[in-house]
Every structure is written in structure tokens, then in C-alpha cells.
Length: 567
Image (cartoon, rainbow, N blue to C red; front, side):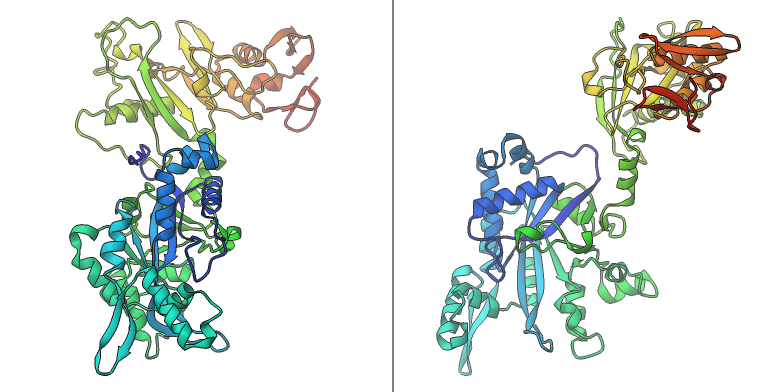
């Protein structure tokens, strides 16, 4: 499958690195129908905006293999999910997550014994057969011992685990009510030292293509720091790249914040340990739904390389909770976030020069522009500043009169031949743009979706509260900074924005008149606005002065924000 491309760079996205499959023999609540499991898995992932899934199984990668084969099989996902959803599901990152049981036994009073788990996440670029052949088969577990002979050690394969379970069932009657594979997996253990040795010995295959993760708050937390288990617990943490935990205290510990200094932590535990999380789903009810909505958000491309980037910036690239603060701010203010920028030649231009003809998607947390000299860094920064009506236009490095806006070049500067168009996260351009054209004021624009607009001017229908705005902003408008004005508006402040953007009361009224599709009539010292059907809208000098006007949609009249009807 071709590698996807993410032009926006790092964005906050939801991941789930621990979702089990029907091949998790020790705890399977999904049933035996694998196609039904795959359908519901991808449907839930798309519904909950999950971009990466760690497919977990005990001692094997059977679930990952089957999902990958189903995804790579042409048309199979489309037949299960439909054409559009099938295409979207192919973009979800699948990572093999092998859950191993180690020899460290935890005994709890009143509860059954358990073992400390140890996870190995592999890159999706590795062939599953290579993982099985050169990792799982190399990993051994002790099946039988003899005082006069070496231990009988078997490769970690489902067949060998079933054989172990079958023999143990013959020797122990209480195991006979369970499957061979279940009994074998329950009793087989591996050494974390051997896991490391196998992976590090085969650097040509596995270097930088695996991550070791320990669940810090499950069985390992039962190992006392103050007793004989101290070293065993410390070794697991030292060896891990990451910790499975959603606990805030564990996260602070893994970042070194609980020690006197981060350097003290690094001296004891070798690396910082970012905390990641997953739903640990064993049934459909818990798919991608961790307890207390502790979702895993990672600020990176949904690739294995993006996941590894967390190791270098563990505090800044991981968030566990309902939603990161920056994402919540962007959702709450979609009209303030520029989603993309299009730069093309202006309509009816005659120039043959080709400076700009491009479309850029922008990251909502963009803070820097990096590139080679002459690559367009200053041009992009200046254009964004122009569209945002920055008061610091004198600091422009590209849109200056001695450069791109040189009046000696094509009389009015090369800039007059090009236009820029931003698109906001909401799908609408919710800005009012005024600019002086010759000696008169012009109001134009749009409030509809960007992709639906192909003309320079777009007008809304009379019953819409949004105004029609000009969706092209000429680069040469910078010189008319005192005349041009960009005012953010909402349904409660549109009239105030217009009134304050114009130089006189009469112009203010005419701007409101055009925007609300009304005609005006003067009576004494006040003005009455009437729509095309003759209904009176408002009469108030306060409107001309720029006071806030809001619309009562149910009664079809205009009123002042204090609730008194003006007509």
C-alpha cells in the first residue's frame, strides 16, 4: 500500500495502541467471526476519529496479519464498509502489538496470580512473516526441565503453545475444561532479557523499528519499590521506551518531574518514558473507549516514525484526556483558523510571468516557516499578514514597494496581477473586507463554501444573516491600509462592524442597506430601513453610530441588543 502523505505536518490525532483481536485466546469477547470483527473495528475507528490502532494479541500477531491481509485485498474493505468508508479505513495505521507474559509472578490476596506483561510494538513497514520468523520463532519458552539434561525450550509459536497446553491438561485435571491454546498461553513465560537480545542482535532487520512498552500501573505496580521486587521493577522501566499508563502521577514520573532534576532521572532510568494509552478492548463494548475518556492524542503524523518522535519530545507530543486544549480552542473558533491558502493570478490579468499558482493547507498551530533561500518564506508570511490585516505591513520583506510591489514594474507593481484566497476551518470566509477602489467604497465577498465559489463576487440570498464578502484580496491593497479594513463579525455585531468601517454616517447606512438587502428613507434625524417586500426593519440613529444590532429570527424583525424593538 502506498505511504500516505500528510502535508499539514504534525497535528493532534487520536490513537489507540492496545486493541485485542479474536486471536487473543486468553480473553476474547469478540467471537469467532473475523470479518464481523474487522467491519465493526473499522466502523468504530472511523466514527471516533481513530487514526492508528495497535492490534494486540498474546504471544502472536495473528489478528494483525488477518487485518492487514483484509485491508490489502482489493475491494474487500469496500464490500464490508462501502466505497467511501472503505477508502477512509485504508488510511488507518495498523501496528502489530505483541503482548508477552514474563516470569515475574504477582500474587494478590483473594485474587488469582498474574504475571507482569511486556509489549513489543513493531513498525508496519516490517513484513509480518519476518516478525514471526526472526522474532517469535527465535524467542523461546521452557516447556520441560530435567535435572540430568538441559531444559527443553520451544519456539514461541501457536502450535507449540497448544502442544504445551495439551500436555499440561493431561497431567493436571483442573485444566481440562479449557482449550489447549488457553492453557499453553497461561503457563508459558518469556524473559525480557531474551527479547532485548534477539532484537538488538538483528539490527539490519529491527533497528528503530520496534518499541518496548511496559504497563506501569497494572501488575508491575504490585512490585514493591521497598522490597525484594525493587530491582525487577526498575529493570522493566529502564528497558522500556514508553509506559502504558493514563495516570497523571505516572506521567510526571516518566518525564522526570518527580525527581530532584531530570538529569537525576536520566541517570537512574536512562531515558525519559512518555506515557501512552489504549482502550485494551477485549469486546465490542469497549472498542476505543478507555475508562474516564482518557483518549490517547499524539501530535505527529500517523506513522510509526511519528510515534517514535514522541521519544524525543515526550512532554509536548502526548496528551491523555478528552481533547487537547489547542484542538478545543480551534473547534470553538473555526472562523479564526485558516485551513488553507490559495494564490493564483488575478482574473483577466495579461501578465505572462508566473510567480504564484499554488494551494497550501496550513497547520492550525503553525509557528514557523522553514525553507531554502528564495523558497517563498517571506512571501507566505507577508501574504498571511496581509489577509489578516496586520498593522505591521511596514515590516514586510516581500510585499514591499521596492520589491514585489515596485510601481516601476508594470506601472502598478507585479502584485496587482495576483490574488490570495484563504479558507477557514468552518468552510466559510467569515470576514468583512472593505477596500477603496478609485474614489468609492466597494463591498463584496462570500459566506458560502470556498470550493463552491468560482467567481470574484458571490452574493447570499436575502434571508441569510451572513453577509456577502469579497473572497479575493489583492496584494496591492497594502498601500491603502488606512482605507482597507477587515472586521470580524457575528450575527450580533454585523451592523457595528459595517458602521465602524466607513468614514461617514451616510456611508454606514448605505453599507448596512446593501448588506441586508434593504432600501432606506430619511425621516427627520433618523433613517428607516425597509426590505424589498416593504417590511420595516429598523429605525435608529444608534445603528448609524455603530451600536450592536441582533436579529430576532422567529419574529422576523430587527431589535437592539438590549431587547427593545426599534421599529
